[in-house]
Each structure stands twice: as C-alpha cells, then as structure tokens.
Image 1: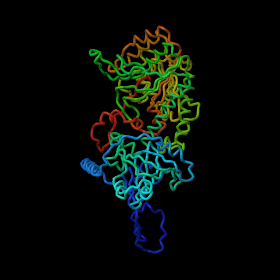
Image 2: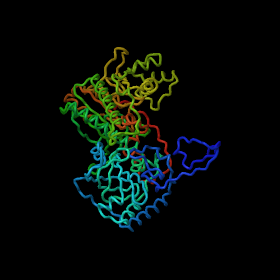
Image 3: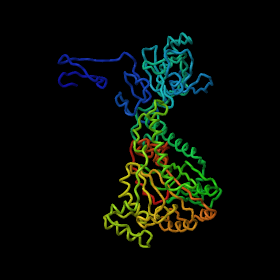
Image 4: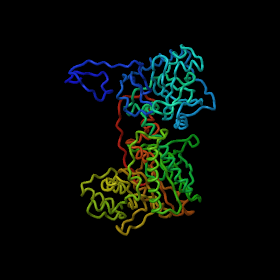
Length: 600
C-alpha cells in the first residue's frame, strides 16, 4: 500500500513502475487464463518463463503452497490414485521402439536453426515441468529431460483434424495431466515465441509414468534435501549441476592420464590389513575367513606400487577409500581418491604434471559452464577462480616458513628429544598443544597456524619434515640441515587438494620408517609392519613418483560447494545411514574431524 496515493496491488511483484495521475484509485488486475502450475509446486497466473532454466529461489516470487503433513500427503496420493483408476489411466506401458524417438537435447540441437514449422514427425519423452491452460481447447506443456526443456503445444482442433479425438478425450487428458508426470509426445518441430525449438503435438500425449505424489514447492532444509535426494535433484537445479560437473572432472582426470599412457587398474578394497596412510580403518569379516578380521582399504597406494614392481610403469586408480574417522564439511569416512604412480618421475615432474592437470581442468570446466549447450551447462555454479588457470603455482618451503613465523629455529627433528623441545617451543609461543602430541601432529599444528592461512591461491607446500611422510624418500635440506621428504602438498583456498611424493624404494629405509611410524600411530589405528610389502621391495622398485588427490574436495573447489555432501550422489555417511528414516525438518551439527598425520 502506497501511503501517499493509497494505491494497492494484489500482486505487487509483477509491476516495476506505475505512473500515478490521481491522488487515489482502486485498481484490480486479473487473468482470464487458468492458473499455470509447474513441477516445483507453485501456482501463478503467469506461466513459468519459456525455455529458461528455473533457478533455485525463483519460485519465491510465486504464490507458495502450504507445507503438507505426512497424513495429508498420503491422503492426496490416495485421491490421485482413485482418480487415475476411474479413468483407466493408472498404467505404466512398455515403450514402443520407433525410429523417430529423440532426446530433448538431441531435438533442441537438431532444430535450433529451424526457420519455420517442419513436416517431420518426432517423438520426445520427458517429465512435465509446467502447464499453461489457455481456455479449454489449448494447453502448453513445458517438458524436461536430463536438464533440458522443450515446449509442447497441444491444441484440440489440430488433434481433432489429425486423429479425430473427441472433446471428452481432450478434456480428460487436460484434467489428469499434472507437473511430475512422465509423458511421450509425438509431433512436428516448430518454434516457440522466443524462437526456440518446440513441438506441435499431432496426437494426444501418452502418460507413460504418472506422478502420484505431488512434487514439493521448494526444499531448503539441508537434511530434508539429502534424505530425499531424488526430489532435491528435481527441485534444486544446482544440486544436479554439481553432480554433472563432478562427472566431467573425473572424465577429464582420467583422460589426462590415459593420454600420458597410464594404465587404469582396480585394486582390492577388502584385505587383511589396511595400509598406505595413517588412519583408523573399517573392520569387517567374511564368511570365508570366520576367525580373521579384515579391513577396508584406507588408500590404494601399496597395491599400486606393487604393480609398478610388477613392471607396469604407469598406473592409476580412481575409486573409493574408507577411513573410520569423524566427518565434517570437507571429510567423509567414504571418499573418492585418484592416485597415480609413474616410474622415473621426479619431484619436479610431479609438480609440473599437477599444474598442467589443474590448470587444464579449470579451463575445461569454465568452458563447460559457459557453454550454450544446456545439457552440460551448470547454470548456478560460481565463476571458477582464474588463479587456477595460471601456472606456475606459488611454493612455500615448510621449515623456513615456520621458522620465519616463530622468529627462531626449530630443534633437530631427528633427535630423541625432538618432541619434548617442540612442545616447549609451542608453550613458549602460547600455542595449544594437540591431543596425543606426537612429532607429526605438533608439526602439523605449526603448518595449520603459519603456512596454510597463506595458501588461498594455489600453493605447493614443499620439503616437509621427513617424519610427516613415512612412505616418501627423504634427504638433508642444505638450507635448514634438517631431514625433509621429497614431498609437496597442493593447497587451494586453504584446503589440501593433492599430495605428491618421490616414493621410498629402499627396503632398508622403508623398514626404518615403518618402525618409526608405529611409534606415532594410535593403537586404535592398527599399527603394523607391512612385511609383505617390504619383501616385495627386495625385487627392486624403480625411482617412482606417486600422486594422490581427493576427488570430492576437488569437486567442491570447482563447483563452489561448501559441504562435501553436496558433491556426493547421496550425501555423507550420516545421510546415507539415515536414508531409511523419515525426513526431519531440522538441521544437524557435524562433529569436527581430527586432522590426520602424514600419509596420503
């Protein structure tokens, strides 16, 4: 209500400017067409924009429907079933194979340059996204398949001329069809008012899978969305966008390695022991070994290096790993990793490969997002940081950076009293000592405080103290006179993205480092000496470069996701475990995840 003029609009969001010529007036606007409805659950006298992707939050401008209780939802489903039964429409017919069937994406691509109506007859299938009734004899259907939309014009008079349908048949169809139904439409290609490809139906569309439950208006609650992921993907376009981009990230990574003549392999997930990193494994049993406890792998590293020992010089694997630890916004107990091992690759080779891979991937995903091909265009994803496309990346050497921040040198990290002196150094600088203050954890705390905050742009942290990477080769750094590892971590936006090593190939040094490692591993993490791997090293492991990347975190980086659950098909472990429970309208706090020591 305008205080000065007294003018009031029933739908004020539809009007931007109004020129007032009198001090007071009463105006009532209304639409003679039947209300439009769409698959996201809103009703409005204005149909959804044609040939545009509906963005999250767009329905907030529309008239919202009240949230229904479970009993009301069940009652509405029963009512829908009875109505469909009454008209013999509760059927799920098998598909008929015809040569004229096209996907919506292929249809839009084939007829994007159409100038006038075509005489070709094509069949397109998809989900009803929105409906617009124009009187009793004309209905416009917006249909969606795999993220693409096409408009369908269904006019009684045209159908009567081509198929001689009755008025009652058309009325029954228009009264039963609703957003969410999956239909098959046959017709001739045409153009919409916007000049986009459209279909003029030449026979009544067939419902091949009727929707029984009404699609929700919106899904804002995070837990409700993730427990009903199928609805989340239908209602919130950005959720599906992230999964599409994830697929392209993995494809690009695989293609990059295959082009470099790597061999993709699969290694065991269940074994008698978990090795390759420092983490608590998931324990399990098998009926074949009733008296033996088995473990899910925490990393594929040892298996892949065995293949290098077997004479396969370049191997990689993209697959799951499992760590029986807490979860937070960037960690999940089940995660996807990519690891590759390349014979005769040095530390510098790994860094150059990483820069080439990340820069190429960032450019590829940016190009994909900006593409006019809506089938792969992620319309709601943020612009990717341009720094990801520019090499070389910044480098920070671990020990000099920490010493510069503290204003004094670190103690000899190979000395027996290194832990005691390092704890005293933290106390002196009023730095909280971590629980279970092992040498790797103390050093990791220093990195968190004095190095990672400066890694917003892509940054390699190099030359970690040797104790932080027990599977890496080590050497004495002439600058600090400390034992350091031939290792680099890539951090972007303060998060670790990739880890790379020159692998330890001496069975003698590897045994010593395993022994040292067992001193720092918690008993619950199942510390053990991997004698089988040590025996394998006796056959000679060539100098090898190893590389590991958390695929989920890389997907978060390139999609702008703030939670790891957003880039997983069905969310985090907590979401998956509770998938069978009734969705609750509440949010949950996730417990912080302790940082891991060393390892990949």
